[in-house]
Image 1: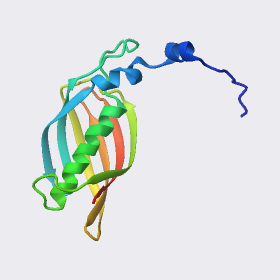
Image 2 (image 1 turned 180 degrees about the vertical axis):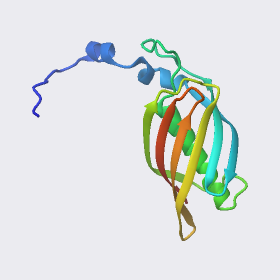
Image 3 (image 1 turned 90 degrees about the vertical axis):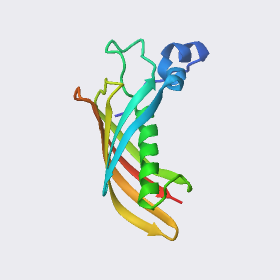
Image 4 (image 1 turned 120 degrees about the vertical axis):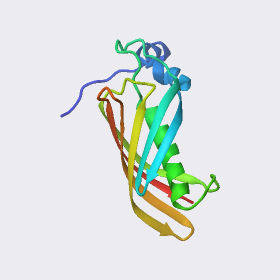
Length: 154
């Protein structure tokens, strides 16, 4: 299907169409990991938002964004990789090599965000450790994100 859409936008048009959250609100979002339980390949965690931006165009109030979700998933993968490699403190660099997150249903509870990561495909590459994980981020109100991660401990 060919589109005939053509438009040039200047600063005023860009500002009028831009997301306030992406421009400024994302910088207000902060979270903390309250607890982590690791049992073999399964990591379960509880996260809460310590501050957050509420979009003026969302009548439902707070909603968890993919940006914050990716941040705490990266931190949880970093922690898991260090624990799996036998470390007690962060002493190596970790890279999230791939991350795919899908929002299935909006997560609205900023105080009780649950995370489950199922790690698999562990490979040792010299001193490095690579793993993948499938994950769920959810709340008690039925909100759900799904994720697939690939991480590397260097």
